[in-house]
Length: 153
Image (cartoon, rainbow, N blue to C red; front, side, top):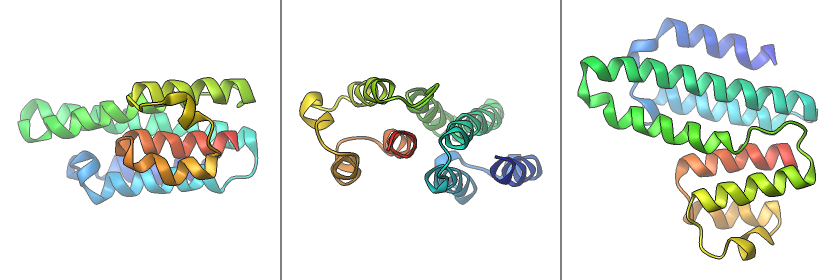
C-alpha cells in the first residue's frame, strides 16, 4: 500500500497548483497509476486498501482544485468532474468484495450511470463489460468500473 501512497502524496504536495483536474496530465497520471496498482495487485485485502486510498487521493485532489476554483473560475468544470469521479468511486467502496456485495455495487454503478437494460448488462461477464461499458458510461464511471472489476474478479 505504501508503494502507491508515498509517491502520489509527495507529488501532490509538491505541485498542487499546477493542475486542471481530469484535463491535465498530472491528474490523469494519478488516476491511471492508482487504478493500475489496484488492478495489478493479487491480494484482495491490499486491493481493498488501495481502492480506499485511491478514493482519498481523489478527494484530496478535488479539494485542491475546489480551492483553486474560488479564485479562478476556469477550475469550476474540473472541480465538478472530480466530484463526479468521487460519486462514481463511492460505488467501489466495498468491505469484503463478496459476490453479493459486488453485484450490488455493479447494479448501483450501472443505475447511477443511466445504463438501459441494467439486468441484461449485469448478466455479462466482467471481461465482456470491460469492452461494452465504455460506450455506455462516462469516463468517471468507467474508472470506477475498472476498480470494481479488479476487486470483484
